Image (cartoon, rainbow, N blue to C red; front, side, top):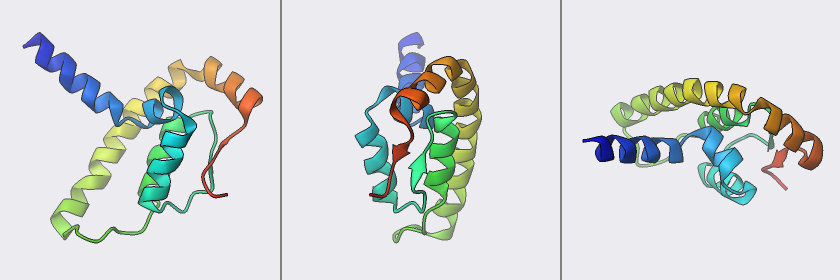
Length: 109
């Protein structure tokens, strides 16, 4: 049971906005938002997880989603934004440094 809980937690964190922008490469975050056709042009590294989640929501509806499926997507992303907010706060010293050193993650070039 403990292994299953750890695997579920790991899978949930892999989709977390903070993990997408801090742990994975910048190209991974850019690809994810470009595939979603987000209207965001850049994601600042400070509170990047929350910004990533809102940029993920700030995209046109994708074909193949019915009303019931699409209505559950914002709930999942908003729930992820709460987790991302907590993680972003914990990682604030690191992300402030990365913002100064590397700047924002540019989506549209």
